[in-house]
Length: 138
Image (cartoon, rainbow, N blue to C red):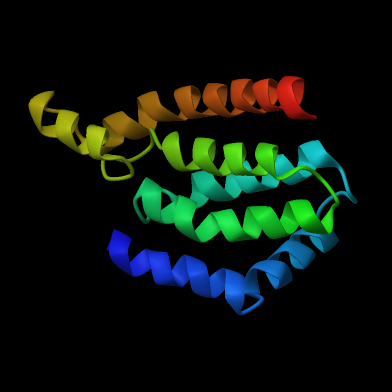
């Protein structure tokens, strides 16, 4: 699956789809705010990761993040860090990250256990991640 996502990420970039998505995100969100743009990318990563693995999320979302930073004349580093963070903090499902899948069987956890324990951890990770990105780059 990961190997199939590499050409998809490339296609998103070369076809102009990333630029179109970035322009749509800029039109929908608060105008030109770096923190808002990084927050949107982080949220997209968190939303996409439960459905595909984290590496595939990063491959597909990175061109969109780069286009969003270019459209807003902002540095790309905070956007790419937001992609990496959003793709890595899926604590809501047992299949969003391979470590979750491993502990599900060993710990005799159920799917609902990930939802109950995962949302506060994910929310805290998002807030702390945005704070760290803001302090370092914005």
